[in-house]
Amino acid sequence: MTTAVHTQHADAYSRPAARFQDGGLDIRASAMGQCRRALWYTATEQPITNPTEPDSLTLLEAGNALEPVVVRAMQRDGWTVSAADRDQPQSVTVEVSDRLTVTGHPDATGILPPEGGAVAAVEQFLFGADEPHEPGGELVIEIKTRGPEAFKHWQTLGAERSHPESVAQAACYSLGLFGEVRDIVIATLDTGARRWDHEVIPAARAERAWDAACLRLSALTEHHEACGPDPEALPERDFTAADWQCRRCPYLNLCQPGEAAAPEEETDAEPSDPVSDDAAQAALRDYEQAQAKLKSLETDKRTALKTLQHWLQTKGESKARLEGSAKTRTVGMVTSRRYAVDHKRLNALLHPEQRAEIVTEQVSEYVRVS
Ligand code: SF4
Image (cartoon, rainbow, N blue to C red; front, top):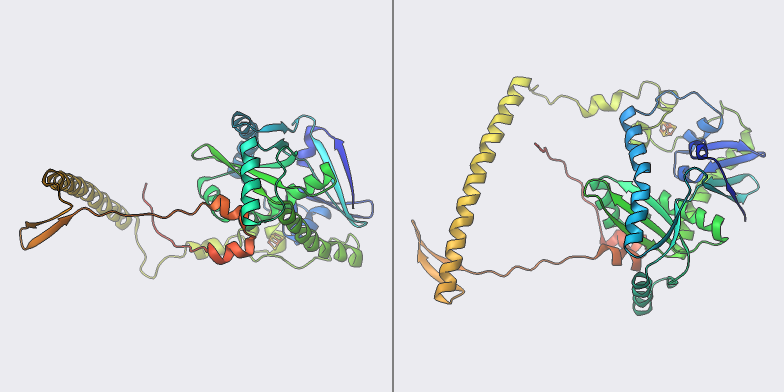
């Protein structure tokens, strides 16, 4: 596998997700996880039928603009970070095969703060996880910004489960910059609470993510080899119209004509008994009234419990009987315990498959009024 590093102009960031180059395919590192048919549309320069909404573009630009904020936060926490020069970013290209290259622009490289490295090394010595992180070694740092929900999702599940494409992307940069896949760092900013956190992924696991991404892309190079750069010969779809990847795909109308509006109609499908706006407004007012009553009842309950707590303390007892309005009740102090899982340590110690058996995901739906 050969690698190359170049300095480029800022417009390099807007290079296409896929293009034909030197008889093969060149894929943008940040697009490695994209739908392969969408990559094919891009490489064959098909017209975009579903341009990105202005709001999504604003969100994307805001995320990019916040990257230096993450770098400064890391530096304040003792990290040594060299961030990319956004006017002249460094481009790395990794040659996966003679028909496939992956090109991208690393966000930053850096060195773990001394305690971070030492803690990680001790953990790995104690628990026998993958190769120890080398305190002092320079690593690739992939910077992400996420909304509160996505941030929590990442912290709980780890990047290999929540955003595997970002792990393969960072592994690509590590190969390009250092000639080997080292441990990689994913640093993420929660755009809601404006706090950041990081995850170190051991080299062996980062390399596995890279291999999996390359294997997936090799099907596209085989398609290229069999069909040439033919815009009519389309690879299979990786997703269906209901998937978020298709909902956000710039080629949705080209790939699945007529599907653009359908799922929304399904999502917004009216319940069997239609609810008018007036009925919804009446329900909202009922909800507000109930909330106000609950709030006042909660305050009364808290005040009463506080008085009972002080009464018990005055008596020097942890439990006592007291006559209530309908029966005699026991008033007692209860000690409750909560158990927390340190997801960061768990993610560092276990492979994603082991974690998937331990940390499972349940999704529920509810209505929130804010
Ligand atoms: S619409 Fe869906 S399946 Fe079609 S190219 Fe886009 S992401 Fe792929």
